[in-house]
Image (cartoon, rainbow, N blue to C red; front, side, top):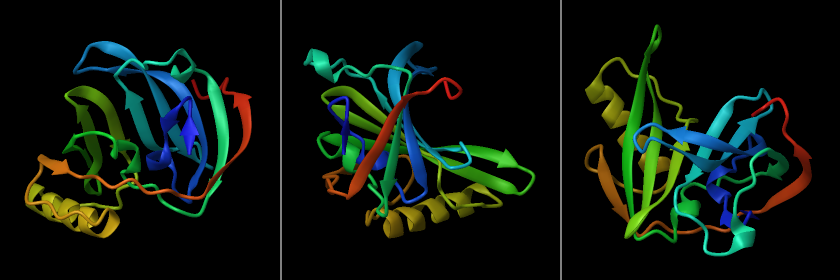
Length: 177
């Protein structure tokens, strides 16, 4: 599924109810970039796709402030990064009273920085770093079919998958910006 000329399959899961276009500040680059963010029915962020590279075609520019209602029964996994030559994977760990949880960070490179995919729906709670890394390895093997040795790592040859997703409606997203 494409929005604004960008493959957004990685944002789609069966839990996702809508995708919002907005500007997102990337602290490591010190700049705002256009992003597409998927939300579940409770308005919790599921995944984010930040587009760093400027589009070649004028019509493929992301316009912030739109809410696209979507329906799907499939998970797009990493297919939004299939056109990138290399994908770097890292984690963003957070400590809570229940343990250590994480989000996965995928950085797509086409010679230069192209896209950043943040996956927040990782069902993993660990008590220490070693357990967290082992859990991430197991998750990547089950979810994406990719075996990794350590985190951070480089992934080559990400496969693009076509998924059946339907855009139901487009509205202006006033409350989610």
